[in-house]
Length: 181
Ligand SMILES: CC(C)(COP(=O)(O)OP(=O)(O)OC[C@H]1O[C@@H](n2cnc3c(N)ncnc32)[C@H](O)[C@@H]1OP(=O)(O)O)[C@@H](O)C(=O)NCCC(=O)NCCS
Image 1 (cartoon, rainbow, N blue to C red):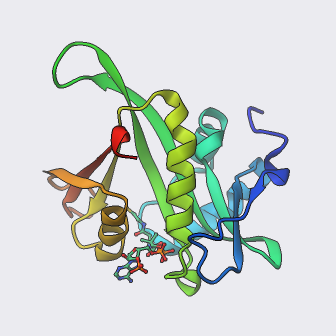
Image 2 (image 1 turned 90 degrees about the vertical axis):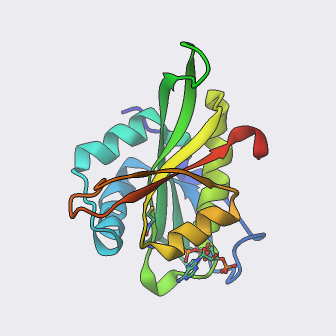
């Protein structure tokens, strides 16, 4: 149902950023979604219903990636997912395409080994085919790990979204121009 039958064979080693060299990055498949949801629920306060994951997978499968243990490819340790939005340009009524990071997380026990960097690098490259002008995302102002991660990818803060999260915390709205990649 809209998912790529080849996802399990689309396995890419990301040795450049895979410092521990013990995980692989591959495209998510429908059968992976329950485990992706589990990683999300362990690592982030924002939960999504199953159909939401499925709709992202159906619409943007090329940039819905997971990190798995090399010696146990069914064990998902992290994921990233994006959607593409069309919004008016700042300078004209013309619509421009933006890649919006929906979510990224890595299991605590596997963090700081380059998994998020590998997921981000590969997914940003994959979603670029939609002729993106920029990549955008929101991040909690207290989430230093994620803020540092995005800074390494040249994301810049463009503003603050007040009380963006359900618990009232503000978000930084940060942007990376596609031309900078
Ligand atoms: C943010 C997150 C995805 C990073 O995952 P990761 O696999 O540990 O990230 P990487 O190993 O690729 O680290 C890349 C960079 O991120 C930054 N970083 C990651 N963890 C950090 C930490 N605990 N403290 C400070 N900086 C950190 C560093 O700049 C790091 O580069 P370095 O190791 O060369 O210093 C992970 O901490 C996580 O899943 N957090 C919970 C979910 C979340 O907050 N998601 C983001 C929502 S916007």
